[in-house]
Length: 362
Image (cartoon, rainbow, N blue to C red; front, side, top):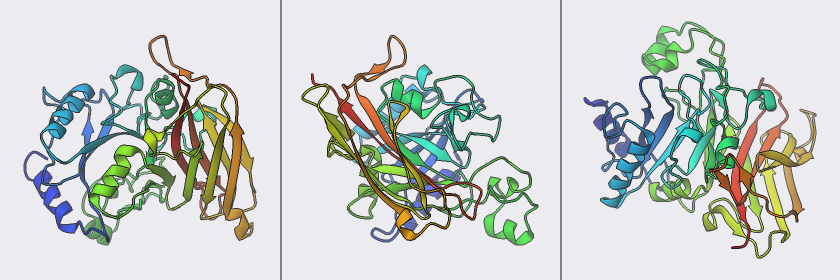
């Protein structure tokens, strides 16, 4: 990376960026070394401005130092940067939200799903995609999305692939293990995308992120990232999902609704269009399933089962969340979880959208 690779990556990203048709972002995976912390994906709005910050360098060898340097970066440039913790629950490279002075502004998102699995909540608590690759799932609290929200961190939900191969929007690691053919080596190169196919890593199809943006440009896509106007799905399911609480959608008004009274009723509305029959639509509030709307378990259900429009009214007083004596949130956090009926593949299509925070009056 320090030699020629990073500069070449910046040039390639610039070469293929075509506003309105195909948008590229330059970025890299910052890895806490040696095996003592998690991965953070770093994305830059402008490839010409992008800088390489080494996790082994003395000025950027901790999360806090990294974010401090990136704040300096933004203060001297007109372009922006965003960081996203990646597979935070993997035991070899865990990201412990409880041990970090987290920066919600520079890290406004967390990866809820990738080919490693889902970091929403522990596997023994109903997670259908428990992390099983590498050394498996971290067995202590603090690493899950639910934990981060309980601590009061304002993080939205995205999904990614982590495929390390030349197939944007698709991953093949979950395919049956095999020795790649000569043609595969030639087409895909010598890298983890090919090496991982040799043995049976317990992985899943990768993830996809949806962006709500008025146009297909770097600036608009980046604004979606920074404002949390995004959501995540499993591959290859391009599920359409929208969530609003009291008329506020993720990314609007800092994803927040402030009430005039703690028990002021707020309408929670959901619209979903799936790629297969929908099994259930769930609203998660403060880390627990608050409402669940069952649709069908029939994989051959008619097209009407592919869509759902659901609304609920919540008039319970805002309670907030508590992690410990020092970390808590006065606001309630709502996010959407959608699950499809499995059909031709082993894994059900799933989407996560949100959160929206409901704040009590001052």
